[in-house]
Image 1 (tube, rainbow, N blue to C red):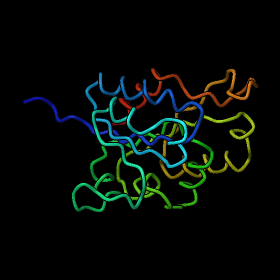
Image 2: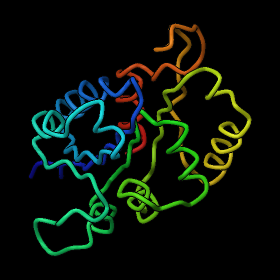
Image 3: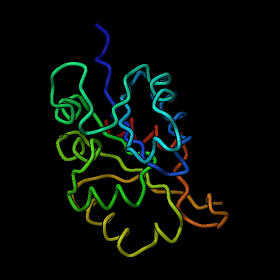
Image 4: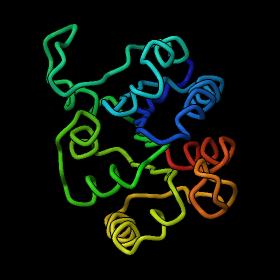
Length: 180
């Protein structure tokens, strides 16, 4: 009997690095993971859900109050379904909301409701990443058992050089495999 396919919930936020989520989905599927995408409202301004649906082969979940296809409390059912929750790319905003326990969208509600490991891959401007509040939020989450895939140094979307580039897709896939 083949091993049960592991379920990865991929939370996608509004970072310029969002385009790398496409490759993350493709590589997770190649590694025999089922991938379900939860997209924040702001991220839909950068990539439409249909692209993630095509790549994952699954419905993309968006709003907290979207009508479910079947009667279920979506954030709870998605949280239970998850073997791992990966947020990639993760903005300073999503990190702050999770750190503060704010549950005002589907992704933050799933994170709060899940018992699965949560991996966070930040991607943002160097100043935002190094900001004391962001670093305090990261430290708090680490102390609570959340795991981080550290960003790389490099050329940022704003043209600056610094820390804040999303970790390589290869590194992200390795961390998923290690933590699931």
